[in-house]
Image (cartoon, rainbow, N blue to C red; front, side, top):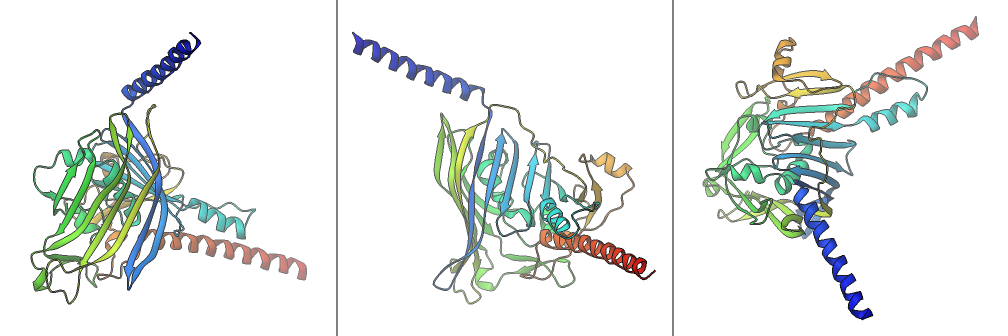
Length: 376
């Protein structure tokens, strides 16, 4: 009898867990995932370490927010999000680094310094040179809605490709993809093909499109995304391991398939769970932030708007009414192929350098004043 009761209790507990899980799953409309990534650049006889970091992603239907942090960068983090309204907001924070530098030199002084820099772009696919890993995480966890709307074999690349100009023009490449049958129907494999041209900014900082060498004139496999494993949340299937390999042609290649891997980026999820509460998908501003706004770049690809904000993201109408005039964006001031510098580092060094210069100037003046008083 006791064994029978024990069996009933065990069965009841098991059924309760199942019912609770089913209820949780029924109430969930999205998921949250966190993990790590590592980039290697194959050279010689083996891969060479290039970069590593961590990521978090929240996806709910076609809404998403993703944050990445590179361990070798001075940036605190890079975060982007969208509410499926055709606008993507990026926020790159260097607040901790700058405040630490200020505190180390002038702990008793207060300076009006920037929290970070931001970008606003129009579109469904994120493209940011300072947040390339973020864009790859989007492909794995938030691109289902994008692929569901594709009516041809052309797709936008998520890896950095030549310059912001080409993305503002809606650059697409031939591609192939497969979506998982289980919800939320994320891609299990994506292949991007080069279309026969090299795209880069020339020495004058202007976009240039150059034909590939003859053997690659019909293009080649430019990148391949592949899911290696899944986490199962009830009937949902979410990637917990994936890789993106980027290829380039060999200068002395003999065929379209004679390629070399230039980067291999591996991602591993350490935690995957269903969402049970509402989320904020637009990055939250933490203070004074310099923005480069590309929302009007479709009519003039080299134009952008630069301004500062501190507590809210402006609408296009607000931007136009503010009197801010378009300018050539820093993002367009790129060198020839292979010489581009990360804007994140450039902006960071500029503001940190400016801040330190101000601090040193103030300290020097105060020191001179004190010396003058002593002489008197």
